[in-house]
Length: 486
Ligand code: HEC
Image (cartoon, rainbow, N blue to C red; front, side, top):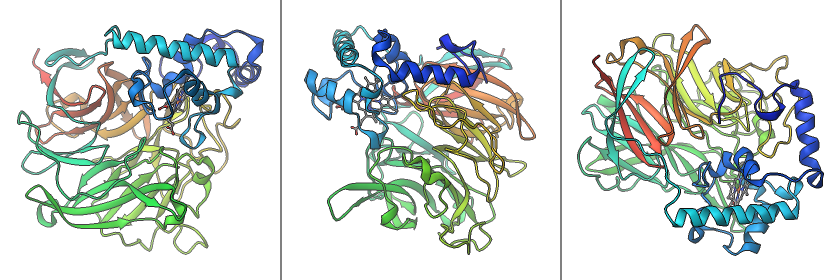
């Protein structure tokens, strides 16, 4: 898809005022018989947001491998999945939008793609090891550091230069560049590895050299009295000893009545402020309204002490029914959270719906608006809100419509790329790109796409050597950006 920053409209409706375009989109969507759709184009515009451009899978499962289908592989099962959906997991019941004939055409399209895949006719872009890229402020090389991982989610550097890497399905590894893949660390917390959840963040305590604490976020599993599998973001810490997780503690775990059946929107980044506090993000778990409800933990940024105690100066401590760890609220799926190395401000990236990915400056007690105000719409084209701004709700620092599927954000703090110092880097899953954002105060004044289409970009961090390390998914690997002398 071709687009430019902050261009709110795309495609055929681009000339219209937003309100009218939305209304039109709604009318078209609501009357399946009114117009025969090009089903390939519909897939590309709508389904691809979750299942990937080539059905390879993205935030939702891939559709190319029949043996991996969860809900049946015959045509009737496929049509039923599309028609009725799995609403708790964001898979819409498409009968509201597509006619039976169009659903049938979609099944045929999926079969065609599966056949092309089987014959090896769908090729996925692969990063070429050593590829040199020319950027605005100089050349850099993309070097492979680790392969053979399974959905690497986050990276933290140990003082000896080794990397701690989480894999979403539940494993933590201590990786040394250029060495064979080691076995997972034993004894890490059990996770609910489903959909977007599992083992997510890994972060070191700022005093790691003396106290050795390593922090993780997990989708914490719970089975209720009816046998339903539920999960919610929890924060664990422990020590690493001879490739074993020891002294494990769960330092944040909400009461089980807040756990959710959905497999989406866990948030899950951790950031320390160097003054004994830990901030972590929790997505709204697919229940939009909860983000505005202070009695619930989901859809919020939280602040706790590094041992799990609740800071008495948190904004909602003592407010009746409010969750006392909440720092701010109205956040959809905050998969990026970082602290400015100079000002100490907390910056957040929030994965929006269809349109409306956000970068926010996070402050105490404020309401970031989801789902009351929003720059996007729902994945099926249904509107979420007619408000993009409201009194008492914060505007993002910047937003992306159409979405890039923003994930992690981090400031560059090394010396290898002096021109990039303290720029904010943002990773994008669906658009498969790494962005460099120049920040002036609390504004984004310039953006550059550094690379594109070599995999879903999950995470980035400045390494101890001053290079930028990036976790890519599909194909799964970690690469390093190194400067190239010109
Ligand atoms: C907002 C994200 C999203 C969008 C958009 C979306 N899906 Fe899905 N879809 C999912 C998720 C998540 C699942 C897995 C649900 C589950 O297993 O609980 C799924 C499951 C499916 C399945 C069943 C796969 C299986 O394992 O049995 C099919 C088929 C499917 N989707 C087709 C489509 C088609 C066709 C479209 C477009 C009309 C579409 N989806 C749009 C998220 C999405």
